[in-house]
Length: 189
Length: 68
Image 1 (cartoon, each protein chain N blue to C red):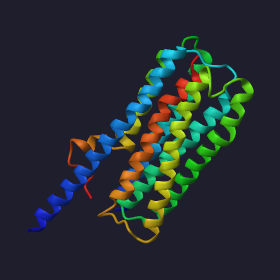
Image 2: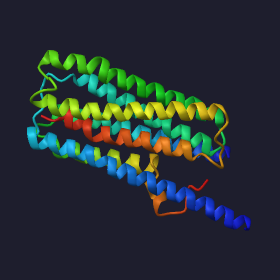
Image 3: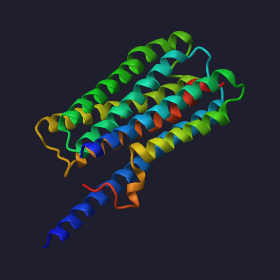
C-alpha cells in the first residue's frame, strides 16, 4: 500500500464519518420539525405576551456565543493550536451550561407563574420544545467535556481531529434548532 | 499555518457578527412589525444558512476540501 493509498483510505473514512453524522442530524431534525409544526398547527402565531422576552433574547445570545467558540475550537486544532482548542472547548461547555441553567433554572420555574404550564395550552408546546432542545444541549455539553478531557491528553492533532469536528458539528446543530425555536416561541404575535 | 489560523478566525468573527446583527434585526422586527412571521422566517433561514455553510461546513459533503 502506497502513501497515496493510505491518504485516500483515510479521506474516505472521514467522508463516511461526515455523511453518517449528517444523516443522524437529518433524522434527529425530524422530531424538532414535528414539534415546530405542531406548535403552529395548535396555536397559529399566538404567543403568550407574558413570556420573558429578555430572558429568551439572553439565552439566544449565549447560544450564539457558544457557536462562535465551538467554531474557534475546531479552527484551532485544524491549525495545530492545542491550547486554543482546549480553551474554546471549555468556553463552549460553559456557555452551554449557562444556557441550560437559564432554561431549567429560570425560565421553567417562572413560566407557571404567568399561566404557562406543561399540561395545557401553549405550555404543551413551550415545555416540549424547550425540554427536548435542553436535553440536546445537555448531551452536547457532556460530549464537549469528554472531548476536552481527550484534548488535554493530547488525543487530537492538525492531522486527526474527527472527535472535535463531530462534536462541534453536533453543537452547531443544537444552535441551528434554536434559530427556529427562538422566534417560534418568543417573537411571534 | 499562522496565516491559515488568522484566516479561519477572521471568518469566525465575520459570521458570528452577522449572526449577532441578524438576531438584533429579528428582535427589532418582532417589536416593530404587526405580522412578523414572514420576516422572522426569512431571518431564521438566513441565520441557518450561515451556520450550515460556515460553521458546519455542509459543502464538505460534496467536495474534497477540509480533509485531515
